[in-house]
Length: 125
Length: 328
Image (cartoon, rainbow over all chains, first blue to last red; front, side, top):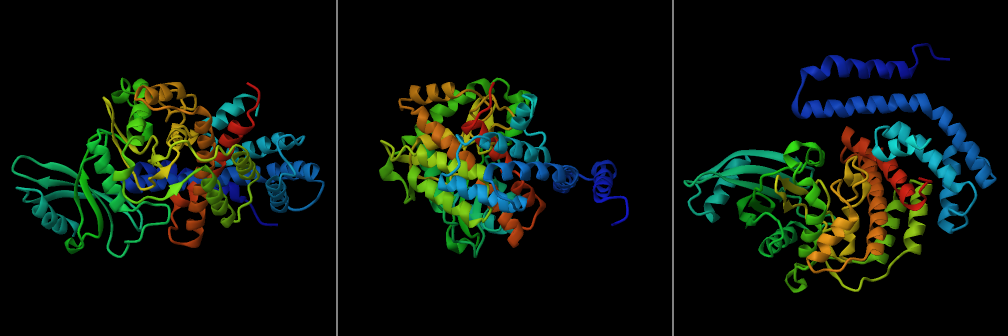
């Protein structure tokens, strides 16, 4: 087991330092690049916080949907193949709910301020 | 120094010009650059824009029409009264500037978020959806026999091409698979009419002033195809920049877009527009994957590229909203 503080607290500390101490000092293209860098660290922090829980739920749903076991990557590949072959579609019970839940979990990490995501979240996730 | 070469160039084709000042690069990847500069002239400075591929970058990527075609299209559009910059000069090899062209600089704003938020454009915004309809009608009416050689792509070929691009990324995405199935099931087939298609007509590629659309830019993806493709692409949610209830670039409704298009004497087909909006959403998602690949494989190892890779999920939620909407 690794020591503390854990990665999530370390990335957050770097993001806060860049945001509060460095960003006010620079301008122009470098300021733009810095904003991108801070956004990346914030995304990484969100992923480190949420990924374990959302992956576990995604795997549960995929197992039920596909009737097989595997890693989250294996199961996604299997689902993609079945949709491509037309074996699974929106009429398949659970597919739409699964894709919605999975996509909402991705947006929560990638772009929590994306307007479509905020609209769907206000409908109850 | 680019100013020396530009100065030599303008003195050859712009009567009375004595040189150039203020050359600054506005944007540029490895293969294509955009510069702004002023031509020094006894009657006063003339604002100009250079679009070029630097020497050694002559070959255009497969989907692009190429800079020579772009210049020809912009000039045709300008002459037909479609808002477009006037092309002043097409570069020749002996000028040492690479391949490309110089056009008149049109003042105004291209940054979508500013156009959607700043007071300066408040009066123009409610007019833009309808106005864009009229501009697209003009663009689709450009005479085919005057166009440069362009690739021709209908709905069926585009589905296959995007599927190939997507599969080459080895990036299994159930939502993209669902979209590909939907597209094949709803493929409208060849359009009744083949016209020029701009290919990247959207908020962000338009110069907007207080009076509305001043110029249509970025003609590099122009091709021949279904005119409804442009009407669908301008509605893709990613180009609404947060104004998600105003499908036409965040400006207004599809009805206003269609009304402007029809008022200019051209028919609309809303079912085809919807098809192309779904196609466009998937297209942007696959493009995000392409950015991820370029980031990984090295040619552009920038943070921005990496982050555009993480924008693919925005197209997944938008595809679900289009194909499997949840109860209101």
